[in-house]
Image 1 (cartoon, rainbow, N blue to C red):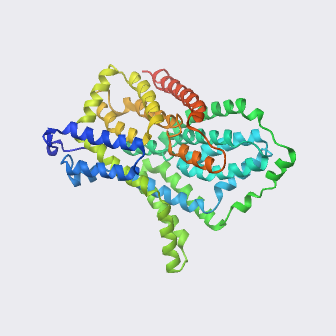
Image 2: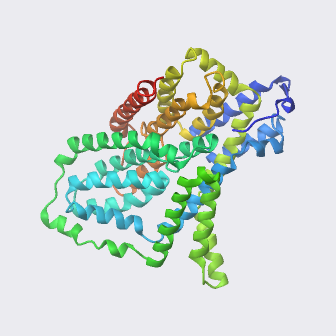
Image 3: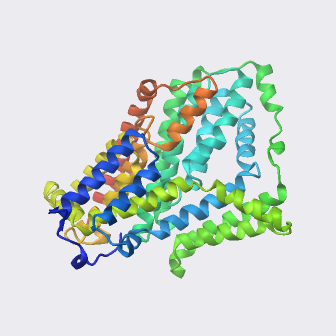
Length: 453
């Protein structure tokens, strides 16, 4: 996060050690988040306000703790995706892919998994499943085959695929912004392991489900009769959206050479696409369109992040996270190898049980506090990649492990294919354990065998 002037931080709050008060505020907030009794943005903002009321942070200090680059990146990408959604391009790709495998149920299971993973690398996971799942139901109904294996595949593929890039999953956005990592840093380091895990996932699903799935020829011909071109609702907007999206990704790739933050590139791309989307409209229509797109931004997530940054900053300035970092160094005997392997499994298990965003937001300043003692940023990079892999792959562990899982379960229930919590775990726990084991082997091989010395 940010450097803090520790001289301004009180040692005592309400007659208690400031570390104890800050920790109590965060523990209480995380406990309420876990129960899901209150909206997560409301909880984060209330806890952030209590940090200020308690005197742990001043309002200027609280604002200093917010990572505005992360917020800008999220808002910009949400605007771009919101406008792109209106073109129907994502549904087009799903139907086109199903037809490429001649509407074979086994082939569709594979291609929808691949499409979901690729979309999740560039869109947030919730948006991806919201776009793919309705098409999945449309195809499975026509073929009269169970939607269940397809939905499971899409959940797992969204969480694995989202790990591949800077913008694919919120933990990566947090880590990338905190460490000023480039888009290509994530592609170089994480995309190979994502590809390996997707190949393994597809092979397992094909073995256990794919070979048993079949549909009558006349039903397959119904899917082949679907016209994917009908999904495209606005060709002009499609060209504009794809052009801006391509330029934004090119901007991410080249940003490190021009020293421009990813948040600035995403916001600029969002503003340009908004301008192109509303160009030539009358005043009332233009204003309505802009408000509509801003309405598609997930403001709950944005305010949740803002509040979260503040409460974690409270832990940072009171010294709680540096103290925990010191304990972690002692636990791992100052070994980066032990730290990396421990972080990947702790991250996965915790992220399966609770939202991985607050966990990663808390871990970032703690790990940063360890860097000096363990040889600096470069030496610590395996630990950072382990945090990303564990947090993202851990989202597959339970039905509440990631937002996309909850969304798919809700859509499945409404469409008559309910996914139970325990029924999901029969598949999710083995998938999570297997992918995290593969990721562990990858981290160990890549950073402690191949790059040793």
